[in-house]
Image 1: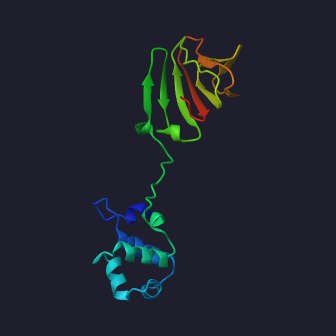
Image 2 (image 1 turned 90 degrees about the horizontal axis):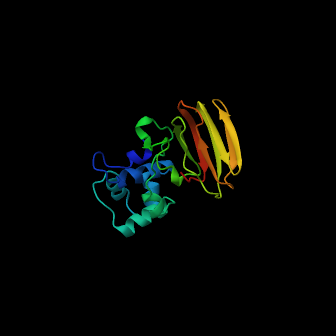
Length: 191
């Protein structure tokens, strides 16, 4: 069970304040009596708070939190577990006439980079991107593509990669008749 889940009352989605106080007290290596002495409250009252038999007033809760060396903002902050691994259920696919884009990291716009899988149909062309302050990387998974970068054209085959600053107009084209597939990453996100 995650720390965030442990701090919730089971099945309600509400924060279990008593449990959070108890865990914080134990993390700080304090007994109930030591916390009572520091917060100028009784051991019995704190025991009831930790077991959710009574609720402290806001002023009393602030006294308890100060005695535990934390602030209300830190105490009530929800630590969401960050998703690290993504599966096909998390992906979003956008299909166009010449190409398909699979967004393989949901909500990547908030991250430092945005990876996609671009599938170019035979003869397909990706959108054209204007110069911007970013960098792009690509790795060809299948087929062959042409990287059009400014006035230059680079041929990139399966197993090869490309990397460039986005200071030129650029796009990808599939010159062949079979499908080409590319992992394409931009930093910061722009897809």
